[in-house]
Length: 282
Image (cartoon, rainbow, N blue to C red; front, side):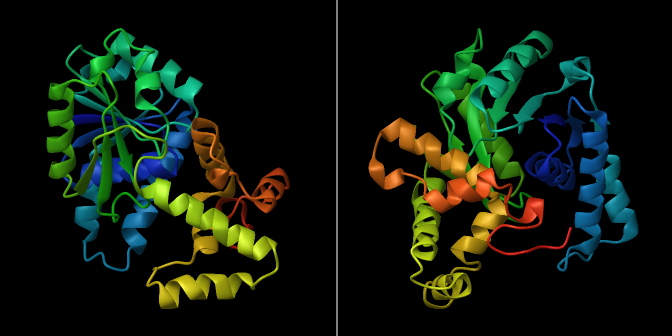
């Protein structure tokens, strides 16, 4: 494969597009809003230039950026060989995208959905050929984070699985294979309840937010504290994920903290809004 499409030019989509371009793929970055694509390419350029570990020359950075083409025309996807969908984390939106993709893309093209916990089997019900859909959960920031979760749905074919394994490997990533589809897969299934518990500890006035984060970083060896991580993820995204697993399992241990709900209603979404548990420059 040489030509990849990434759908959705947000934080994750642009990061995945950068990752693919860095590994030699020609990338079509699609968004229904062309200005979002242009903004995504700008964010990639900024990321490449400010990366503390980057020793790339201007020529190398230009070579990476030249591999990325922005488009808002669905018909441009007709010639791609692999699709990574990274649109809004909502089932009905992703289903609609899958239907549109099936109208445009060739039959052998794999559709890989970047989702942090949505059900792959349910999503595949939107397709005439559900065997071509697989979950590939990239982690923030995609160019640097070494992990990808690969999740098969009930109908995912062996061919789709093998193509996706090889593709993820070509990006230099470590793949975790989710053998049994379950809410939130592996990483989020473990980490999201931990973040929720940290919010509850803060909500109950047991400890200051900085000290909660220090406890996990110093004693637990975490690179970032749970409340700072919540801000980074986005409190609205975190709440959506918590509500998803709560509905899926019916288990009260996954009930979102009241403070999390209140903050989302107040528009305190974390880093992307400028304020969450901490304040950020915009």
